Length: 149
Ligand code: TYD
Image (cartoon, rainbow, N blue to C red; front, side, top):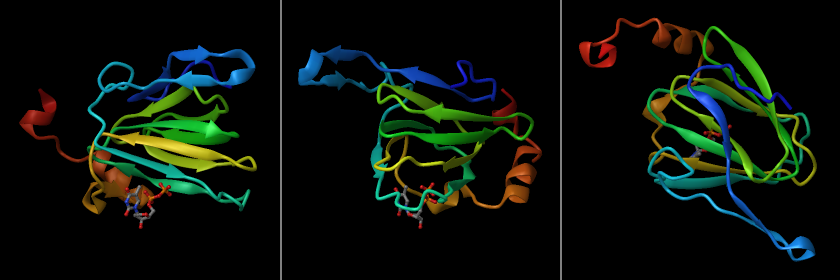
């Protein structure tokens, strides 16, 4: 796996883990401690029976998310409009932070893969940029004074 994320607004998040040998492991994610935002929504993606499935293919204007592959493995493609990178997630305690304005894809799901997502806000379709050209135009939009500060 890439051990450094160079795409902007993103990075690895390593959760603490408590290892009980053969009796299992606990990983812990606490609000504003391990996760850099208030978690308002949790969702998970499973039944990924089509190994050729490509999910995501969008960016968010405001939403921040952290993705954990809590079973199996998959690849996360991230693109800030300038730099692209593909990161393999294959360890339940090592997640990826996806900040705003990142085109992302999830793919190459292993059998039994489960993706757990912690999100900074409720679901809102208005926050999605689902077309790549729309994403690029959004990045190049004239910025408001508030955005520039
Ligand atoms: P989407 O975010 O595009 O999924 P992915 O990024 O995994 O490919 O969402 C797929 C569909 O599910 C879309 O119609 C919106 C709906 N959805 C909700 O209603 N609520 C949610 O919290 C999420 C994540 C998706």
